[in-house]
Length: 232
Image 1 (spheres, rainbow, N blue to C red):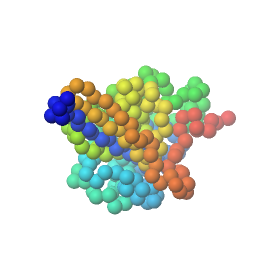
Image 2: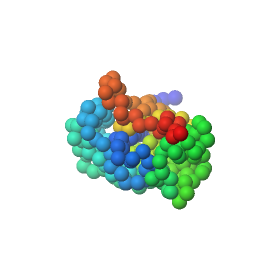
Image 3: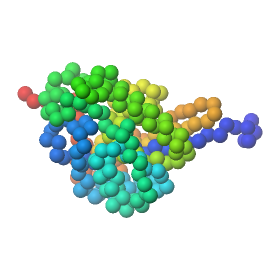
Image 4: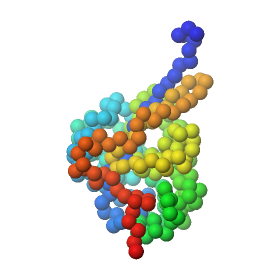
């Protein structure tokens, strides 16, 4: 096949960044609660700023902790973009009446070995299921893949959102995305290849922590799910 006959492949690179850790949750589930995060660890943000691509379009959820995280990256020396689009559909799962509940007590009430708050099809009372989160994340990714085709995309979002994106990249199997840890401030890259004949995802890196060589910054990992100490 001559070079001119080969199908053109467009590569769109997603650089997902999870927001900085939340310190003022009182040990409670916060989900879509619009709660602030701690961006005081400049060492971490300096490291993150070094690995992200300079010529990228920026997206975030509509929740303040993603905006604060982006601001901390820019303050670390990353050139501030002209704009950052807010996407409500990239927000964390709406956990309804579970929001505000003690996390350890909630985990103790769930089946042993649960990898998320509930079965992927079980909605939180007054809120969403993980499948609801997955479907709105998928729709947004598919739209942005068309809007920003061939570009680098930096998306500052949430643990649940990034797990949903991983499920999409893993052949549209949402539950597989829940197998991954996504630490605060970590970088996950997913590459989307599209041609007229087919599309495919690749996962060059998941949960990369460019500051990890210095264990003084281990607080970027917040226990969740089965790691949370169950109350007696």
